[in-house]
Image (cartoon, rainbow, N blue to C red; front, side, top):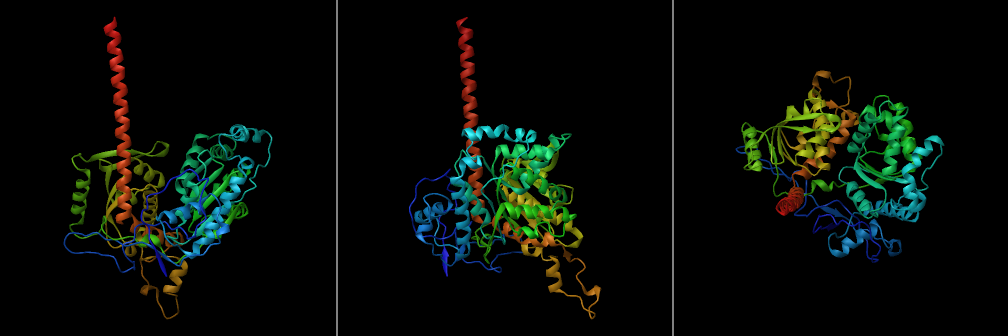
Length: 514
């Protein structure tokens, strides 16, 4: 068993490569610096005195994979991965992912060979014609389905799906009509556009036309359907998108047949699954390792709650705020909604758990919050069970949105991430844990056990993300992101000040000349 080592997790951004070398191959994992092995019992928790940080460690560990040199193309995600190996940014890989890299490279090659046919080039003549193509298609109905099938990647938590998506997307030419977006954010955009086109005979067709005009290649990360409103429109929406030539690349924790499992009116959702399987190559990423749980454990902001935890969290919040004064603020979200923030300053917001997860809030509110604040202090995350199932769903959504926006979470909780979701189980887990027999009575059951297939399925992802978000590597990336934003703001302010100075100077010169 070889252990892969990542020297730097800073993303290597390049629009696309047109040269490369044929070198030995490994497999990519979304990873960070490795400071040691991880086991579920290797975290450090202090429940007495002042709360202490709780962390896990994460690394890459797997067998190396052999790849035929002839399979390595001159450009694309597989070549870029090999370049990173040669540069020393990555070493070795996970054998189970080599098939995934081949599928991603296959799609990349097919897209490069079919740029004109698929109308991918935004600057080409064919690309310009696309601006009005969907309007004409409404007058003269026709099918413009792409000759290239998309790709639907699914697998367990922490198997590297998002990293592989980014590796693929970063190699695509910058002038292609493409978009990489989280599924939550994509659906919020769809609903917002539907509101804007209210009253149109078929607003879904109009929205699909707008989306396909902007992006022929649509990359959706974390494809997960748990909302009946989304489920009911996906089939018709993607029917229009595929007819407009859209190519879908998606990642998900679930196989297509398991999407929206046991959801309301699921029979109306089933045609979408059939369409998805028809228009995409379905590929499972197999791995038994969650790499997000193997981050180094140097510091963090996850505190086990005790009597003094709330005061301690407020003090930590004030330390982050610094010389700024924290006061109530308002964060604007989509469609004109506003979210009341109890305390906010210097890019940091403070909320009691009840204010953020016990109220009727959703992904749109959390996206709006993350746009205004890069750090969230959340006090009093409870153990989840049957009594607060709805709050658990909201907390899962909040963590997803924060993770996607690279936000920093500082919180107090009643237990470790594992403890928080221990009572949340799927139907199959509940049956295997405590199958009912004639000798057992209902009163012996855990009265707070929450049997929820959707929540039981996504809890592993939430545990994993909470772990990673409190790793030193994640916090270092967050600090770099904030530093870059501050630098950009300073540069913009200097530019504006210089422009104002030139304007004033010019005005003074005119006055003087009079």
